[in-house]
Length: 112
Image 1 (cartoon, rainbow, N blue to C red):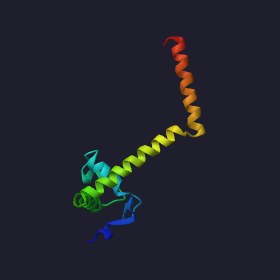
Image 2: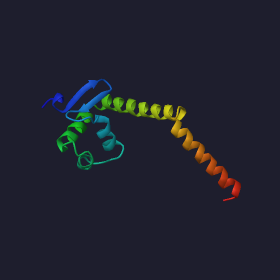
Image 3: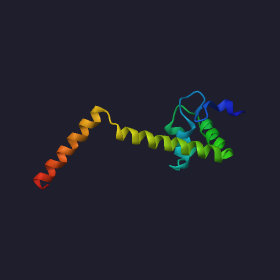
Image 4: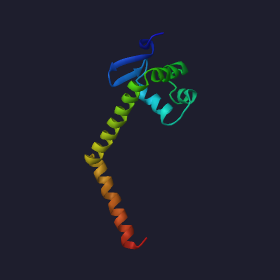
């Protein structure tokens, strides 16, 4: 089998598992950072076969440097997105933050 049998290479920073919208970073994060077994990953992502999970891990093992850079970029992008959301919150989040501050101020004022 060839890589194209398992993956859709949509862009240099977007590799998806064929037949799904799941990126390889999702599977590899579970495998590398959460130390989950392929079987556990397949049980969590039921739209994937165990073979697809193993193929993703094998792709990583055969292309460790490139895929590690891919995952590092993905993690950094996620960090930047969370930072941007925090710095530019939606009106609903602003309202919730204000309510939280008011409750904390009330607690401190009452000595609780």
